[in-house]
Image (cartoon, rainbow, N blue to C red; front, side):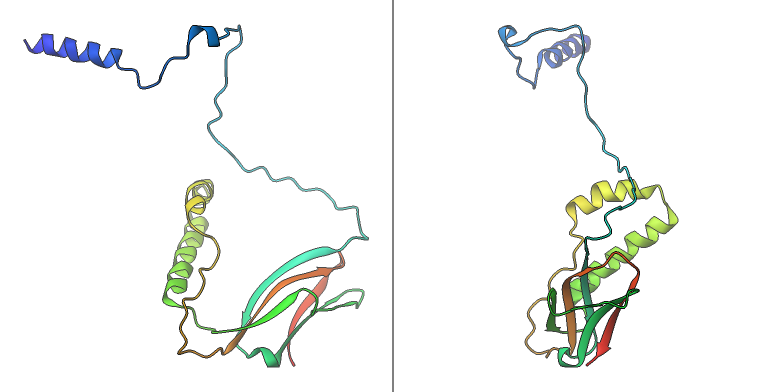
Length: 172
């Protein structure tokens, strides 16, 4: 009796088809087969930039533990050309300490960095799985009106010449 039930179950499973069949009139057979794309990989390529006349855009997002009225930022390159900081940079008053949610995000990021240093082969796994679902940007601060801004967030972009230079955050 048990063997009979097993045969019925096996035949039922064989008949079960979760994928609907395409009508024969829609199918065109060929001698070549199909391909299945299963995985991605990162390929890094580098080449020399031959365009010296164009500018390089640098994105900046820095928080300094000083009020915005006392802070300035500029860039001085090897040609001693000063890049105007007022064009693309925004000075935003903020609180210097991280919120509890931001501290948790920082701990997670530090854990990922330490694992990458220990196990270099984990890089592909982390980039493919963790960073797809988790946000890589610092979460915004929850509104807490009890703290007054004690720092300055400098963010935005600068266009600089394609030569070595220094980015300065200065008092004043």
